Amino acid sequence: MELNVDRLTKQYRNKIAVDRISFSFHEGIYGLLGANGAGKTTFMRMLCGILTPTHGSVMFDGIDVSAEEYRAGLGYLPQDFGYYPNFTGWDFLLYMAALKGLGRRGGEKKAKELLELVSLGDVAKKKIKTYSGGMKQRLGIAQALLNDPKILVLDEPTAGLDPKERVRFRDLIEQMGKDSIVILSTHIVSDIDKIADTILMMRDGQMIFTGSRAEVPEDLEAFYLREFAS
Image (cartoon, rainbow, N blue to C red; front, side, top):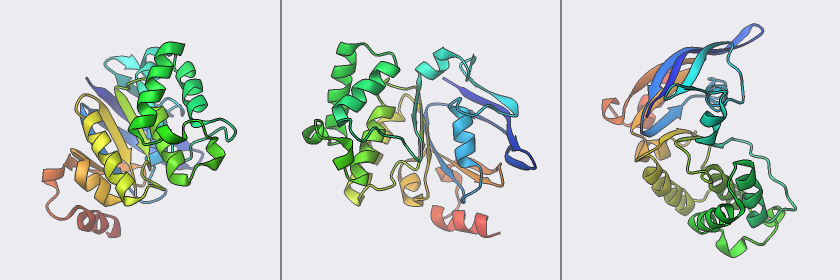
């Protein structure tokens, strides 16, 4: 299993948001760190086929990011996830399951399983507009997992989660990383420190560090702050 990024570039007029990034992802959890404006979200949106690169390519086992087969194996939780406030959590997951090509029976089975997994089973029939921010975030995590993705891209997934929910989420992601590619971007360095196999750091659209957690010579947060203060 390989997600290959080759000289990936995105330019907006006079600004280069992502600058010729090349990297190969394999099974495991990749923690992506960077200050606001570093290019993380643009990079991840290109991995998901939402943005078209100015130059370069994204391929998963030889399949281009623009192909339906690529998208069928993708799960994505954007930083600002759109909800239908008058939908119940249950209806929302069934709707997303249909969009992802799951049949009615399969969609219902998976929705029930995931609602329990993210501790929303008891509010599944309540409207999303009554949910707290953390509950909405958990629902977003559930929709990203509906199709058992081989590539899971998560942009600030722990935003709005309380400490107990964050621990539960980290445990879930650790399981996913055993046979999937998980790319996780967050400002909460401790989340990445606890679960990431590989650390990626972006600055000004470029990868300034790629390496295993063992290759970071000190406390991750101290290392991160030192790299971005320089």
